[in-house]
Length: 90
Image (tube, rainbow, N blue to C red; front, side, top):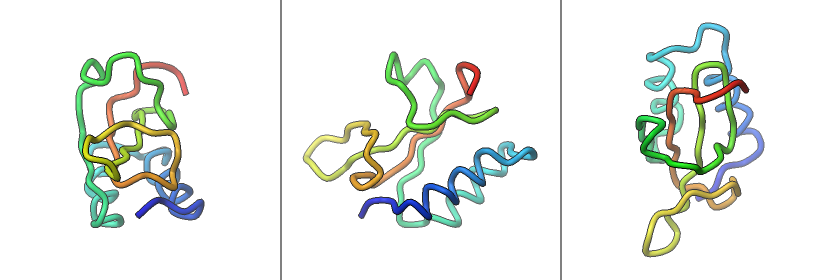
């Protein structure tokens, strides 16, 4: 499936908006219905570096192209998104 540069820009706009909050995830799910979207506690991610950081959220990309799911930093391989509360300063 993968994400285009334009789609990444749309995700950036949603998650990085000044008024971003819990309803932002619903908007993200509505805009990208074919992507899996999972919200987890930051401690569930461990030491993985986020693909992007925003004021309130950290974004991770999921690659589901192989038998096992894995995190990736390559948007072209992304089949899903994981969002956590931001762990640090963007």
